[in-house]
Length: 327
Image (cartoon, rainbow, N blue to C red; front, side, top):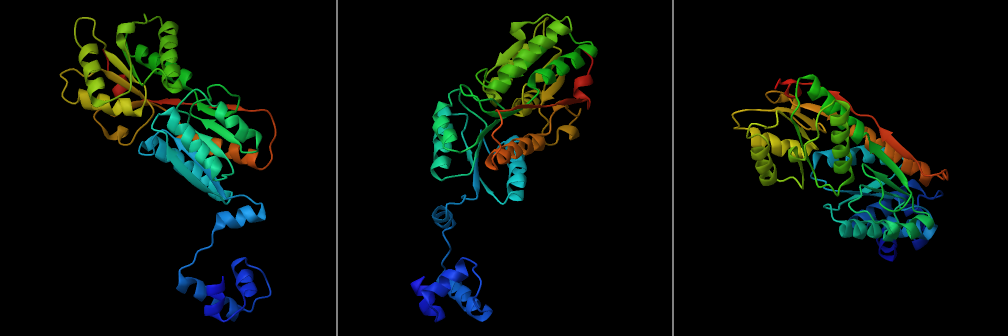
């Protein structure tokens, strides 16, 4: 401030009034101060100013699995839209499905005094957040619930969506339906597997463990699974992909297959409607998921003290062609 005052030819108090948008500063004087600040390359430390005033830091934290996944990119954009409407910015980090990394990010955000945190949890232990929540930092979990604490949660209907996928394939005449899911330690993967089992029971289809593969999807694991599931006299005639990443790896594995099974993907994904045949999906509004979680978080930030809420958003099947292939 001394350097700016010296360059602008004003007092330190005048510089303070200008940077804090206080009245009673002549426009020409304010313009000289702003020009001096720009010439010297100085920037206000908004965090320090807010802490000194006892106000918010103007930020919220968002922890996702992988910002490179289009699902989480869309989720991030949705959260940003709501945050912007409340005059906040979003700090985002990827846990990479690692519970230690999730904890590190969450506590780092708390150390930076964010106004609230949105978490797509990677682990099942979240007691480390209880002191922060008691101190006034609201936390909302989305896409998956917290493991061992009671907190606000926004989910999609994983169970109902997978039941609908099985029902749809059975109506096309399929009885040998395979399910390719993510690691069973992940809440969404486990819930969708539960929906697959329930769908088989409801539709009178025998649940066959040999037609189920649950592991972290890679091109290699999905390729090996496809080779096993689609060979032999008891081969699967239809496949449900447990998420968008599984679906993409599955399509690559099927690219040169002599026989293409019917396919339904849980999660829509880019260009799914342009493939041959277009991919039938269990779709849900990712933006709605981000909006609902962010709006709940800001309700807490603004003083809502009601009991923790659990919101479950609907899904719907979009028939495009791949799920309508006959056995």
